[in-house]
Amino acid sequence: MSELLLTGISEIATPFGEGAKRGAAMGELRVVQRAAIAIDAGVISWMGPERDWSGRAETVIDVGGRAVVPGLIDPHTHAVWAGDRLADFEARSAGATYEEILAAGGGIWHTIRETADKSCEEMAALALPRVQALQRSGATTIEVKSGYGYTLEAELKMLEAIQLLQERIESRLVPTLLVHICPEERGEQKRYRKMVCGELIPEVARRGLAAAVDIFVERHAWSAVDARVILACAKAAGLSIKMHTEQFQRVGGLEVGVEMGALSVDHLEVCSAEQCAVVARSQTIATILPGVSLHLGLPAAPGRALIDAGAAVAIGTDLNPGSSPLFSTAAAMGLAMRLNGLTAAEALTACTANASAALGLDDVGRLEVGMLADLLVLESADWRELPYTLGQSVVREVCVAGRRQVA
Image (cartoon, rainbow, N blue to C red; front, top):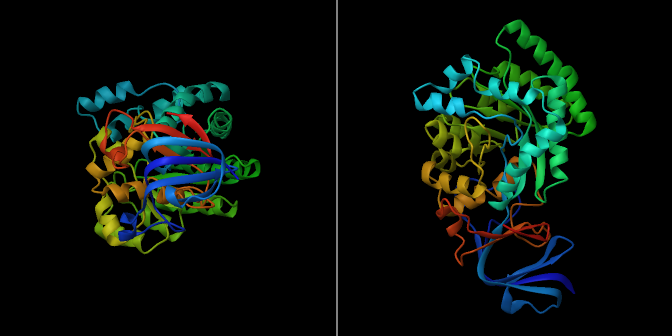
């Protein structure tokens, strides 16, 4: 006898089969009409047309003719921060560029200063409503980065805040150590890099505070050479690697990330056709962040070209105070259709199976027997309402490992 049976499902729409979906496969979904799902111990134990169900269940819930999709996965957020970036927003509206604001001590530097004196508890309290908003929008797995600490102690404190957050939210949080901005003077850069490799990464690995190490590679941040050193240290410590790259300039970061086997290379707003082909020939996921293009007015990452080249594309919110104050994973999915050229089926795959692969996970991202019962019950009978609707949530229920939450 099953613990829980969901019936009255108008349609289930899900990617299927193990691993990331590449190229044309991103547009292939399994759609089951008039369906039911059985759940035991937080795992899907049966799924199919409701007429084929012949078992018994302790609890039966009729969802009333609504569509069901996998829980969304947000593979790129900076949800822990203090202060705001409203002055930056106003400066940009008056014509200042991201780089000009950063050079004047604003941007990431401002957030670092605002976050520096906050306790672990204070940071967790500030971040909680942000991750709750993502969960209400449909995110059942959320990556959360450090990166606003800038010192050994502050970065560890940010990762500890993510641990506290996990105790207060149903969705799974995946912590990432982000080596974000770097000192402007080269000698200081080398000393900071030495601290990151010799102290920070080993301590994070020893304490299990993060699953991966990410690094920001741009002319105003770290170089591809620095990234190679830092990511090699991460891999030696047993951590996965990721990269922010090709957001403003092409400085070799994408190629280093792919060569070193990064789980994902993220941003890619200035990714060239040749670089799309490089990603497509690799196992690395291309994570696009349409909220950044909307908020900063940057060209959108070439999502269509990446898929046409055969790459696996994921979508994230990049939730952060400066370049993407986007608190809805479903909205990111919708924006990727409008700005990056994805179809509805590709966007769903990018926010589920491929986002799971971008985090190195294999138990979420699709609805199949044996997978965690992370799923969304929508208000609509047609799953495409999820990326279509902007400004209003169509998520009725969020189910995390079989635990139902009203959105």
